[in-house]
Length: 154
Image 1 (tube, rainbow, N blue to C red):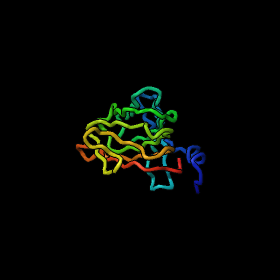
Image 2: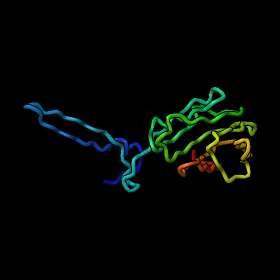
Image 3: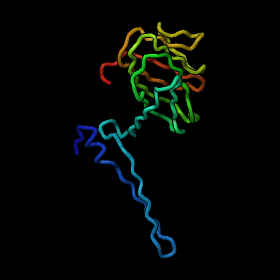
């Protein structure tokens, strides 16, 4: 089977069945799992849209290891990024649309970046342009290492 689009991929979700006979009754458990067949059977990361309406954008990991976040709307004012339920988190991606270069992002103290737009002391990232940006983060056991780049693909 060749899967060419995400719509085809979603419609071909893998179903795992587990039938267990208990005292003459059969207990059937069905697990649905989306699998990206085109990418070495990797699990697809769900896309979550945290609200950008207030001054804080919360990335809620829901105790998952990996997450993808896309801001609920474009924004033009400074925001603070907060992490929630990130105990098991190892990586994440985030996408956001900035409409004013004054929209400085302040990150938690555990974030590190090697970026000219990054203020290490204040933990602030200042955009040098407007439009869509993509961030990728990996947890090294102590800190989140984040790269942010301009994205034309979002």
